[in-house]
Length: 103
Image (cartoon, rainbow, N blue to C red):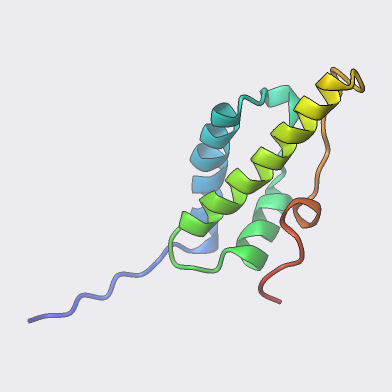
């Protein structure tokens, strides 16, 4: 039997996957419009380096989903209380995901 070593994704590949696929699909699944939330490359990089160090992107997807669920809840609460109906919700990675798991 031959063992084949398969390397995981590097940070640049994770950034590309997160930006082009994971973030967009999660935003749509949560019903959040593009103009309501802005995700910067710096925020994605911090998320990848401090919270998601596995070889794949499964935990990265879970963290992005967690952040978007919290943002969706904030938007619904603002809409119910009639505060800031059309303003964007600004959130940082540390506010939504807590302190980093890796330092």
